[in-house]
Length: 208
Ligand code: MLT
Image (cartoon, rainbow, N blue to C red; front, top):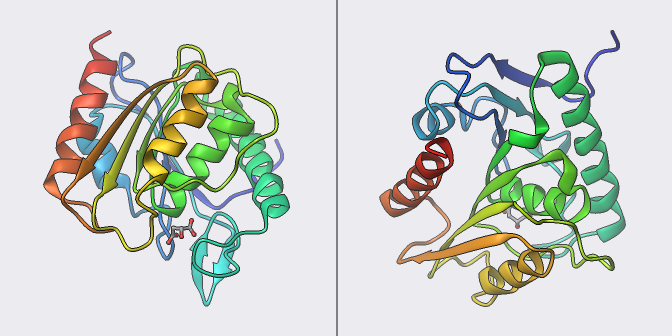
């Protein structure tokens, strides 16, 4: 079997009823950064956690940043497809159902999960986007019927323009996704309210 293209951590699930979770860290994180909240939000889930393969002054990310909020969209697209292909290969290797896979992404990882939904919706079932922004606006409407998405934003987040949570929700809803937007009195760092809404989102997924 060929090696998988991203450095990653895989943790097998202990509860077959719990969906597999894809963890996508923020800038400067790695494959260990979100393991604790992955376990907390979805106990017993298999966890697939790649490390971003782009370095910004030594800080791992999933695509390049030219300046704050400025991206090379062709590069974002190319890296989104590369990550989607990794997910498919990892799903085959670890016997994960992408039809149940839930992305949990923070910051750059949330933007990456949103790009996956917009460009390669077949590799994810649902997503929790913690502090995302609008990066891509795809020419084609993605097929997102049946996908549930939680956007958890900070009202005082200096990195994320205030209208982006609703703009991103509109892009995803256009494809048929069911999107919930929660805006907290918070900055870029996560607060207990993020944990509460993300935990509730996973609990309702797991109870279906
Ligand atoms: C990004 O580059 O994806 C966003 O600015 C979020 C971040 O990583 O700081």
